[in-house]
Length: 199
Image (cartoon, rainbow, N blue to C red; front, side, top):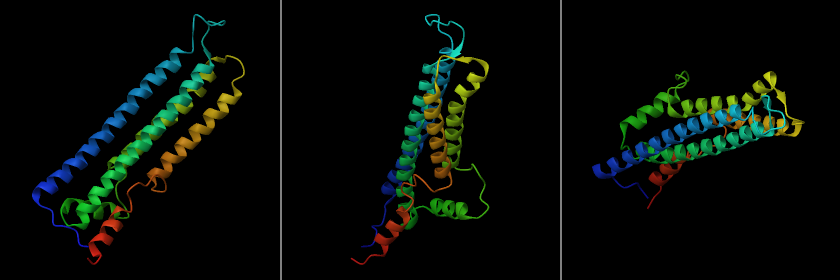
């Protein structure tokens, strides 16, 4: 079952859809940055509370809960960004296999090289962005605890924060290296199989 020949309207539609997915990934990244700013602000603001028994700045349960919640939200946004990238891979693989886009074929050859430049595509920059945001989110309460006293025994929350931070950063790093959350990476093989199949 050979692939159908694309007319110019189909090519335009597919290129527009790729652009839409790229714009959605940009929006997800900007949402992550905005939520990070709000989360860090809430963490710092939560250090002192006039209603607390101890009005001096202290690392409270709320500080750690905000960090844990922010890491979970960043993780969900990162996974969603990877799903969008998978959608992009499906369309661009089709454009390559159907010989409808010379750019996509050249781009694939460029990034297949052994010494490709780092952080020169959106996948690398997104992994860097989410990795940095997650690392700062996980470390911020620890930095605060070096300057301010803790409000009671928070050891369980510290362990939870450490585990979530480690897991989050591991997933981001493995995704960046191509070992995790690889949605749509085999799309080209599937399209090629459809192209080569007999009717």
